[in-house]
Length: 94
Image (cartoon, rainbow, N blue to C red; front, side, top):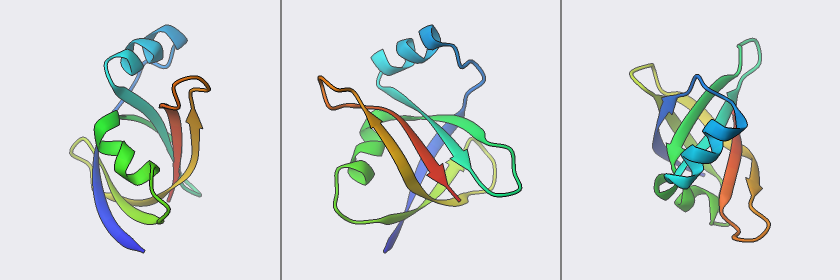
């Protein structure tokens, strides 16, 4: 397994309309889960996420959300659009 870093931004608004607007701009919503912590909702640019999704390898990712300490995580679940095959949502586990 190789280690990489991914920059993300915290997101506050989680309505369906707001998330669809983000996706149109090329920003993908995600959630970070870790035992004993509250889930963290964040978003990343689709271009930065694609190299970790469309590969056969598993990566340990240093998830840097805004200015917080990097979190070690792996991609646990990915949801794709059934027509375009673009990523619409993903979950990370720490």
